[in-house]
Image (cartoon, rainbow, N blue to C red; front, side, top):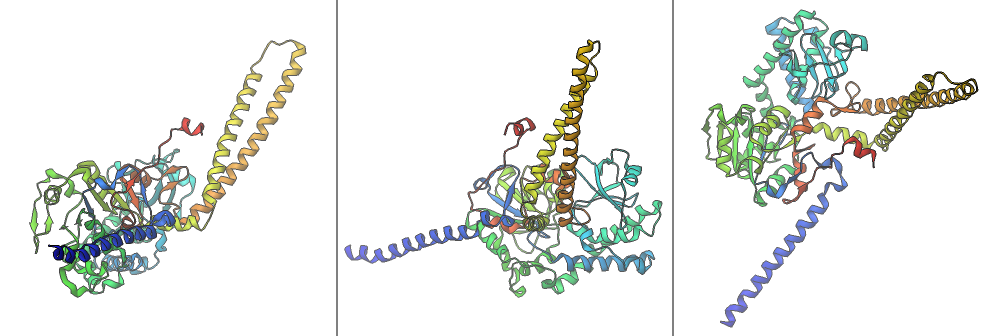
Length: 500
């Protein structure tokens, strides 16, 4: 008996040592990866979320797990669509040779397809910037189109206004911008419809994807953390699924490259997922009443099409127990948030670019905030002196000896108001210079994706309303432990800010 017990002691000690080593390695690994020291890797929280209560994490594929070389992808898609416009629509090739710079086309712009105008608006629909073709519209030109208040109804006015909400739309913007200069007002809608038709065609007929799959390394920016993230989530006991609109054949052809694996390894990548849904047809996929049912794939864990009830049944959890990570504000987030109450995380690659710009301009954002606070304070001072002046002007029927005193008070108020007004004008100039400097550094045409002056953009409002959290890359989720408490910042009302 003693011999038997002694023989087990080394094994037990070794196992305990292994567990202890693993524990310390996990702690060191997490300390190294912490986004406290690299805010570009952070996950930002709009609505508090306990990650420990999330039972399953789902991912979109394109522009989420698959990080594309957008310059190469946009050039390919633009060329294929341009060739079809020349061949099938008779558009002169030279009209399509002078495209704007790639930075001109960005997510979250709004297209007025009747007027041929591309817009950036704030959350209330005020038009902040507008271009027709490559020419920036003046204030008077904007007001001729959208009235004195520069307000458009976003995408609610029939189909006139279209929000650009996907990275695949950038080539369409560039082509349309080039063609608008060669068209009259009544022709612009039909030009846009032709661009849209041929864009859909190159995605459906495999002409785009066949080029990509023939040389995936040219179109994919491999992130070595992708496989580590999927393994980490499953090791933490969470179910992991893929839900994409892409066809199974394309997803399979690209996934090994996305993971940094040899493409010859076949379907081994499926071991990283509990379920894979291709040809999802989002956002309709999130409508359980659509009547769409799935088709079986080549393996049991692969489904083609269907609706979300099949995912929830397969993985054994539903609603807020599921976190879905995607890059498309409408197809991935708004529908899943409204219809099924999944928790949501939006991947916004542009966030990383803007943070790099801001970090290269240290103190500018803080300085802008301070100037704006002083502007508000000075504005109130001006209003105060105006009110006092108005009171003094309204005084009548005073005796002669009091008139001189009132006159002196009026002069004193006038001088104080003038000084405050001059100071206010200086603060306004300083604020506009700082805002222009920061905006131009972010994007010379459109400024920030998230902010329009003091307000959020239309995209920023959607981000705030529908994304529980957002980040620049899906793999940033790797930097947080399985039980992390994603805590949103406290909201303040204006009167609360006044007391701080």
